[in-house]
Length: 316
Length: 264
Image (cartoon, rainbow over all chains, first blue to last red; front, side, top):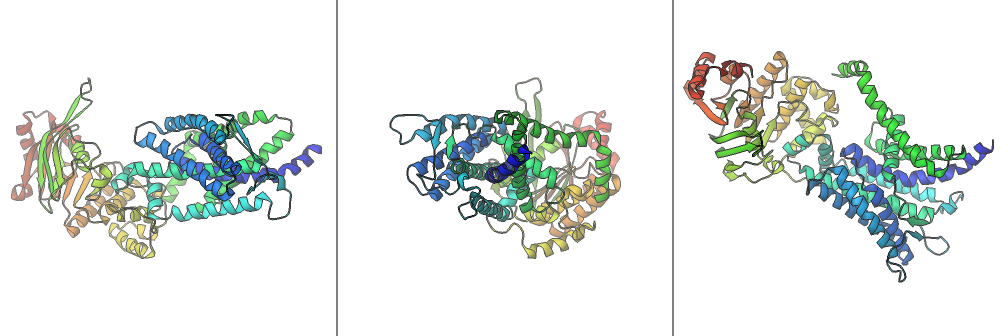
């Protein structure tokens, strides 16, 4: 019974975390599902977003401006990965890993900017007592506009609306075509490389936005905050698809399902934590969840192809 | 319209897999020419089309379309002039996108892609009309995902996409080879209709000699990276398969390739 009570008590927190990470999951959706690239930059760019936002806020900047700077930093990270991939011919996964690794050093430096005693710093603390923050987990149970859930929902809706519009434009369609079939895209005069770079820029901008929000939400930016982020993002995308893929056909709803997947991920996490797992076990759990959910559709296709063919035949 | 001058292309140069695919090919297409291309496996037919389309660069030589030198232009920039249909029905369309979205992408070939709407209402009506020429009922399935279509339907759609924005040059790379005979005949029929209607300058590879003879105003045959037979006008009209085989043996100095040519 105690387990359940403490679980229910932790639900608002799970929603908050889930929403903040949900924006990151939308970024992962863009690269993984639309561009068909597994972009590992995100582990670094999430922390970069957190570091830049935290730095700007501790320097006394307006938190909105701090978030904007975080987004720009993330976009720059995406640009680097994109150029390494398209301009230097490095496979996308490796290009992402290289940027991610480089960002680790850079993030340590970013957080030490303005500090006279240190040249690198692994954490940067924020507090609602000292700074003006947009979201803070401290108010997660308050029934006022200060509740972080309020602003996180607005951010989520705004991001989904903006992306819904963008992917309906000529440029957005070109990006989708590039992810769906590069040959076709080129034959139709689409610069596939430029589209991939653009997709990586947009995606990492969102991931850094998520990082900037998370740093404020949890009251600190740490150099490790992005470790395993890609797996969490993938888990959110896949959980959303498995649970809602059949119901959510519209593109905006598909993006929303990634956010819902992220919330569910954090609720499940809270639950297993209450069951006695250590928080350090979570990475193992995440990896298992993602591996499992990626395996299911593959095995379905491999061992139950008959059923699938029949389905396709009916549509043709 | 198309001028290919002395192009050479060697794949895997300097390795044991070295393959001289293009051996100094020159070819000029007049405006409105419909040229069929035949030849055995490895003769260089597809390589020629891919070089013209810019899929990979030439080693030497030049290619110009409508008087403009495109030798150094990347594939997506050449697309401004060129409509293409591939052998593989999967290659020419985006499976996860709708029929109308695919058409809208094709309608913007050669234009910059801006933040304007990816597809407008007026376009939808236009596409509904245009799809009727295919006679496949696709005009009622504008929002269906292309992945749900059969190979033949996808090829027909790709053909429509390639010609939606009138290309200076239409490249057809054995576009009916992967289809069953009945579907292949239908797609070929539609091809003929569209090419005639828009008077398109066309280069069509086919593995079928009869098709090569029946279509177009000119026929070329390739062998070992060269054009070995080039017939047009009356001579082309009076061609027979036997006659063509004779021409080939003379040009290549062998009759062993007959079967390969017919079947390959």
